[in-house]
Length: 381
Image (cartoon, rainbow, N blue to C red; front, side, top):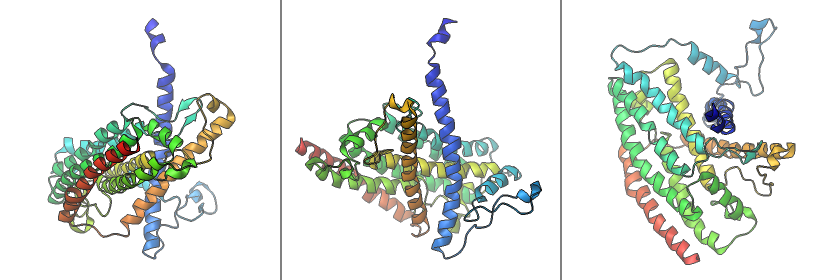
């Protein structure tokens, strides 16, 4: 039984705890209330009310009235979740059942898996607030995220219906095209940081200022001033490509309700549809988190003390670690609101315009930007 002593139990238990915390206490509630925020923000943009009544039916428990939450409608995500759980699980007879059942899982799992390497805090209880602090974190994110397209393609093909099939084909072209500009736009950031580890990316920004806002460390050097322009280009290309990768307007051609009914998930209902829903919003959260890590300093907030592994074991250090986690997800929420704002503001591209933007503009801009960054780095050295 000596081999049991060689197993890193603390690492396993801490990883499981961080995974459960990240998925069940952060991501799933954040997905639910991002949907609620989208409905409220879209209602605000369109000058209507949106969901504003749903509370909790406490009258069923014997109380005189139902519990109406502040800004009525905050119970809407709970009602939606219950609806998905209780709806009939229906599989059309004309579909390829094995791939039809497999597709929602392939759409959801990659989006959640990419969160494993994203540092959502500094230290807390002596542990780094990242599930897996791997040395090739950015490569892991790109590799796993690219698998998500298979879920959409399988959903479109296995449905044996024209609208889902067209949605699946569109998604294949779109996501493969914009993965190129997404990956190339991250290269200048990695050249500046000099490391593929995402925790080191945040550490660099703590010491030298956020890449997009380099003055956040209290000083501004010539190197940071000259590098700001290629960093800004990378940020713009990366953010636009992330919109396309997550199938959000103005790049929602795989769904495009006005043309394809609901696109690749037209034939889905109940929890299978909910998994697609979860996968889309989890991908939004993962994409926003990656933008925060690479360009906006991650969990760092200027003038806020930085705790260490040792100090995080104290009460003050634990509270500071909790503040860092709050800062990180506050930045993510701001980016999610930008995703929502863009969706309900801009019209959808035609498919030829979408492909032209990806291949003739973003790809070339991202490629040239790598050479600009290399020239600036060589000059300032």
